[in-house]
Image (cartoon, rainbow, N blue to C red; front, side):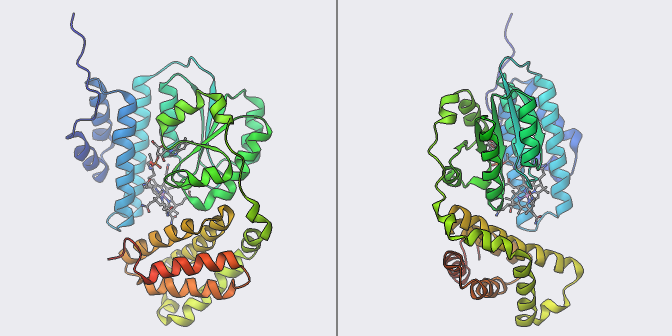
Amino acid sequence: MTAAPTIQAIPAGAWPGYLDCLDEADEYAAVEVATGLLDVGVPAERVLLDLVAPAQAEVGERWARNEWSVAQEHAATHISERVVAAVAAYANPRPTRGRIVVACMDGEWHALPPRLVAEVLRLRGWQVTFLGASVPAAHLVSYLHRHDAHAVALACALPMRLPYAHRMVEACRRVDVPVVVGGRGFGADGRWARRLGVAWAPDAPTAADLVADERALRRVPPADLAHLADDEYAGLVRRRGELIDEALADLRERHPSARDYTPNQLDSTVSDLGHIVDFLAAALYVDDGTLFTEFVDWLVEILTSRGVPAPVLGSTLEHYGRVLRDFPRAARFLVAAGSSVTAGGPGVR
Ligand code: B12
């Protein structure tokens, strides 16, 4: 008897075909591409990590370039969720190891990345409980009290959620369950996880290796947050609403066209002004101005692709700098990010 052929990697042709399925919102064809790969022997883990994950990153790029609407992004993400479910059902592994609880930080709605991690852990024999998006810390802890978990894997896709991430990590520690974190929110090299004193994995396979080594999971240097004693983070968070209102008034004053914004434009503007405060607060929390500059560079690209000129953002950063002059760290971060805007930012053409 000859064994079925086993292809270890995704064939080059599968990728554009799969993206076309997402583009055309054809969930049946997308599921067929994925299960077709499983049929020819591609391991389920490869389908999840080398097909679904990079396709989602491409979805994000298309949205960022304003080529795809929010609706197209939502449709594509829904299809990816269907594909993940189909791959999981096809592989159908039985647990042989302890329980890992996988959850998103409070306020974090990017549930698909940790879902991929959850499925990889499952494929490697763990019994996984996936709690999904935005899990409040208190609820996570009471869940951990009731279920004996070997470890918790916490996801954060947006750096602005890092202060919440820290609270959740601390809450898990109080019930003595080791934690591994992951997702784009911790920085490409995980440097903000190190600042928060928690084990970090860049990807699902590394997370799987880490949870299998409980000592490594617990052997992490403690959090390094002495800078929080200056109260800048807490002060900024307390003034969040007032800061956004004032920044909007300043914007209307300096750029009269902003007075005629449609309700949708106004919504996006208020949301952007809030994100500026939230990312600045997160940068203060981990005491790293590059967190804020990276966010501002990203925002310049988003706004430019939607026809909003970068100087509008520059003047808002100057405004925040003026009203936050008693916050020396914040003022420094704002100046650094402002110079990046003036210089054109890395992605601005
Ligand atoms: C789909 C999507 C959404 C969906 C999420 C739905 C869902 N069910 O997940 C929705 C519509 C909710 C959404 C909302 C928003 N999103 Co969004 N989203 C995305 C998108 C396109 C795909 C996410 C994804 O599935 N990625 C695929 C995974 C596999 O990639 P990954 O993160 O690299 O994951 C790997 C590792 O990081 C690691 N990992 C990931 N998580 C974890 C967890 C653990 C525990 C471990 C160990 C490892 C680990 O392992 C993974 C596999 O190896 C990304 C683009 C992108 N590049 O990711 C934007 C993106 C993350 N979103 C973005 C933004 C800005 C937002 C919004 C703020 C938009 C808005 N204005 O409202 C909101 C914020 C909502 C919130 N509060 O959480 C930006 C973030 C930019 C930034 N500066 O931080 C991105 C990058 C888009 C872009 N190109 O600009 N989004």
